[in-house]
Length: 140
Image (cartoon, rainbow, N blue to C red; front, side, top):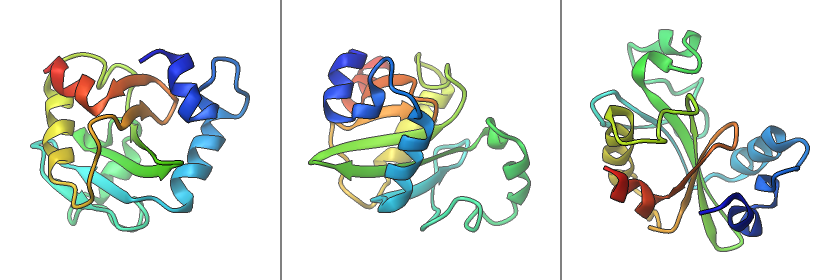
């Protein structure tokens, strides 16, 4: 999916959009469908309404390891105007190619208790575009 196509659904993904990170945060923090941590082995942890208040037990130290989070992935799923967006807080390269982080993400995403559409767009918190869930699954 091109950035222009992504921007049709989520305007803050347009190439010259100013304040992109704030727009992503505002959308995903208002009414998320699901907030998650994904363990390095792919197990899902429900972060309820906030990552910092709901860190997996015994792993509180991962909050001090941004953006790697001790190998955990954290993110939010939100629906906006009928389209789903999955925002993952990670390094730009983490989900860009097949590898352990992508497999970890897909294992965790498969366990999310809310429906996640194959055409849900996956981005980083810095608006790096990874494609749709179906694109990521095909990449593995």
